[in-house]
Each structure stands twice: as C-alpha cells, then as structure tokens.
Image (tube, rainbow, N blue to C red; front, side, top):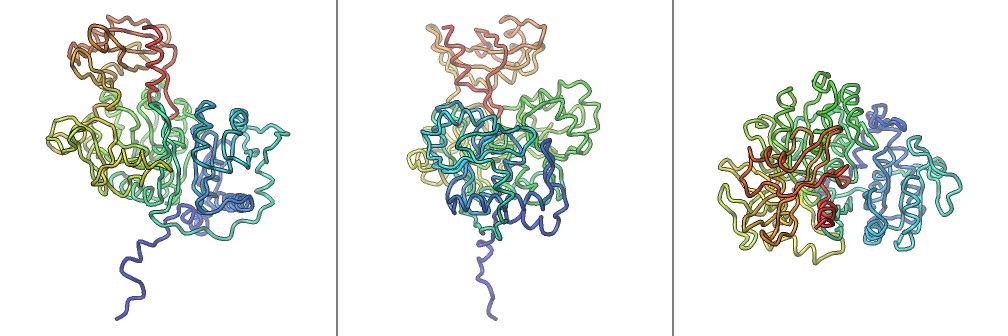
Length: 528
C-alpha cells in the first residue's frame, strides 16, 4: 500500500502562531482573547486587526524574514503587531521600553528593522536616535485610550486610519520549526545586548514542555503584567493561551493592588511572575483572604526565589512553581512539579521533558557529581539556534556537543533536582572564599523593615572583595549594618555576612524584574 504522505511529513506542519489565532477566529470568533483597559478584543477582532495591519506592513515593503519592531508597554497593540508580523513571515522584535537612547539605538540598528510600531510615550525618545537606525517607516499607535497619541507628529503615520482602510490579508504564511519568529535582545545589564533568535520550534517545544508539566487547560485565563518583551512573560503562558483559545488579561505595568483585583475579578488560572512581584503582592492587605481558588499555576522565575516567599504562599494554600531558564531557552529548561513545592523547597526543579540539563566544571566541561556546584548547560529543541548576526557570540555560547552554556551556577542533588546558586559573573571572592550574592539576598529577603535587597562585591584592600548589602526600606523604618549582619547570621557563615550597607530609596531593577547589578555596583563604587 502506498502512503499518501512521507513518514516525516508531520515535521512540515504549520506551527505559525498566527495560523492558530486565525483558526480560533474561524471556529471560536466570539470568545474574548484580550482583556485590556484600552479595549477588549475577541478572537475575530484580534485576527482581523492583525490581518489588516499585515496588509499595511506588506504595502510598506515588509516581507518574509524582515524585522518589525515594537516599542511600548504591554497592550493589545503589542499582540496585534506581533501577529501581523507572523502572518507575513516577518520576524517580530519586541524592544525593551526602558532602554536609554544609546542602548535603544544599538538594539534597533542591530536588528536591521525598517519598520517600527510605537506608542506615544516612547516616540520622543525614539526621535532622538532614529537617524542612527535603519528605520524608514514609523507607525504610531493612536487608537489606545491608555496612551493617547499627539496630533501632527511629523514623519509618523497614525496606524488606525491605515488599518481601517486596508483589506485584511487573505492568508497566513505557513511556518516550520526552524523558521525565526522573534528576535529578542537580552537585557544588556552585563554588557552589550545580544539578539537572541527564537524560532517557531523554540516556542512550540517550550509550550509542549509547559503543557506536560503544568496544569494549563483550554479556555484558561492567564495574566500578563510582567513585560511582554521579556520571554518569561510572553512564552510562559501568553502565546500558548492564544494558541489554545484562552483569554489573556493584559496590564500595561505591574501594580500589586490591581493584580489582586484582577486575579479575583477575572478568575485567573495561570500567571508568570518574578519574585519581586509576588513579594509585593504578599504585602497587599487582605491578599490571603481573597478568593484565589481558581489560581492553579503560578510560575515564578527570572531571579532567585527566596524559600521564605514560597513558604509564605504555601501556608495560605498557594503553591508557587519555581522554574529556571533564559531568553535563550525560550524560556524554561527546568520546572519544579507542584507536588514538590515544599518537599524540594528552593529547587528550580527537574529538566523539562524535551530538554536536557547538566551541571559541568566550567574549566573542563565535564559533568559534576551531585552536590558539586558548576555551570548549568542546556540542550534541546527549545534552545535558540544562536545570536542574530553574531557568530562569535554563538560560538562562545555553544560547545562542540551542542550544549548551551548558561553562565548560571547551580548543582544537582542526589535526586537530580537543580538548585540555582548564582550567576558566574556575579560571584564575589572575599578572602579566598566564594560568596554567592543570591544566597545572601535570599537570607535577607524577608528581613523586617527591608523592602528590597541586593548584594554585590566591592574592592577591598584586605579581602580582595567585600560583601555589600544594598537595601531599600519600608516606610518609617530604619536598619543598620549590625541589624543586617545579625539577621543574616542565623542562616549564613560569618564570611558571607555583609561588611558594608548602602540604603537606597528604590532598588534598580531592569524591565524583566531582575536586579540591575551594573547600576547597583556603580552606586556602591561611587562611595569607594
């Protein structure tokens, strides 16, 4: 008997996310896909607007493989621009909206994007650097009540009229596993930003990993307050939710009081958060008296997670699920199953089903024994094929066997569960001893009076480096260095205790919620 299709024809399946949204629009068009203060959208409305924008982009010269940039906060427009790009086979470039002028120019220039969609709040910053980019077409979001657009912006095309006049693109370009979908630049807090190429296959395999390990369902409601230009927020639940026909509650920025109201009002089932978000939520009055019974899957990642935070939520029946990964792993490489939230507290979990994880000696590249700390390396179909037009960085990140070297330090316990220690480059060497800032930060995470904490090393004539605690304080409180040392001494060896204390009004963090160690070190070194 002759088979009508070759045995591997499934590998040629169309995994374009825009194709899935179009399918949902056809069969479930009246389902609300986006809940947003600037206006909700059904699947039919989202797909039609994306199809019309695809025509606008195409008529402006955008074709398959071209890059389309977006600059703005979380919004429905972000998703519309992304899907319009996908429809054409173009590569979507979500830009970090907190970048300063030189960084913004560098990211846009490296992306090679000719077209950008921008919100009014970021237009003036872009104007200052537009001549240093390859941009030639500037579309302005002018139909979002959350960010009203100025009139008469020279050189800018208000997009609402163009979208309304355009015929919807008739079809979506089919895309396979190896086709690039997103170009996402790393935060750049430790050097020049690199463009991470994420394929449709990277997104698809991460989704399969998540679906296998985490209790997500068709029709779920997910919450997106963490920045969508960050892979953790975008590809943990948002992309999968719109593929599976669910609803995304989109918030322009994180506000803990608003988040609590959303969780109750919209009966949210899943969300991605960085630890700082959950710490802030825990301080909202009445948070643990609210009806959060619908909240099944809370993934916390993006920064070291204090065990004390996990215990606090677990005591109120909310089991946080720690995960670990990077932009380059799209994002999850490991995940702690919910049933082990307490039995393996502090662990980032086990490798995702279709992902391999090792801990190796950073010098010999040989796997280490349980309990021995080394660099975490990852291999699997969720891992980026490399950095955009940067073969040197790609070669430096991957070894000969295809393992991606993360730059994170961790260890596996006897059961194969991963524990994150710190970033390789953040390690402090004081008096010949290795001090991992993340360990000290975890020890101080819930210290009374401390709202936020970071630990960095500073040059020291006697010790080589010394441990510095940088803290922001809760209103009306005071904290001394002796207080910090005494509190931490219950959990840490003496040589790990901070020898200096710096108090700041607010803690520098990047838009991904991670401590901005570059800025923090600069603040500390200004006094030395």
